[in-house]
Length: 110
Length: 110
DNA sequence: CAGTATCCGGGAGGATACTG
DNA sequence: CAGTATCCTCCCGGATACTG
Image 1 (spheres, helix red, strand yellow):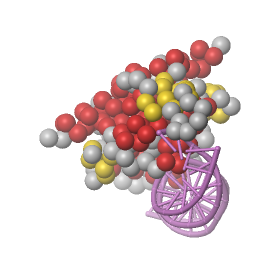
Image 2 (cartoon, rainbow over the protein chains, first blue to last red):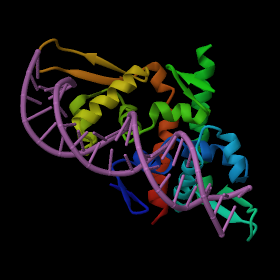
Image 3 (cartoon, helix red, strand yellow):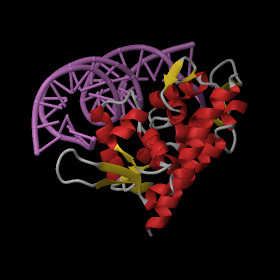
């Protein structure tokens, strides 16, 4: 049994999937590899996600310590930036491997 | 837009997650890295999965061309082996990266 | 700008029983 | 042994409207 953040997983692979699994989390992390992004910048990169879902996924990634949220203003209009934490950066090779395979599949079809 | 097996994905990373995402698929693939396994051998490796779910996940992995199903007997008791296809083997580095990160997280907590 | 609030549907996954 | 069949629950994620 593997434990992380109070959750139990039957396999080392499922622990990782518990953190980066789901429809959107890898996409978010993939876009954050190159540096911090603001909320609306992320939305532009991910045109098909809804505000609510993006917001929820960002929150769970933050709770898992993978990304951090930094607020630059106290009054509207707000400026908020999301970035990988040091812990989150340890995921970069894995995220890149996931992204690379997607590219590989599309390219090898031609 | 990235396409694979009739499905569309907004990002290269989500294409990969479409194939290996979900609660069990990476676990199945992880156990198949070392060689073919029979249905009940897989069940032993994954004690908490139900028969139905394991069966369904194996079927979708097979449809995506990642694993192959080989039947050795025509009459009960059946002998069926699951193994990675050549295409599925291109996923090994990614699966290992995912599994390694799970191990890393557990070890670095101590 | 960066989010909540509210409502909702679908599908992933579970439990149990049965079968070629 | 290797699965189906049936039924059911949960919650992820979507749509839309609203707010500090």
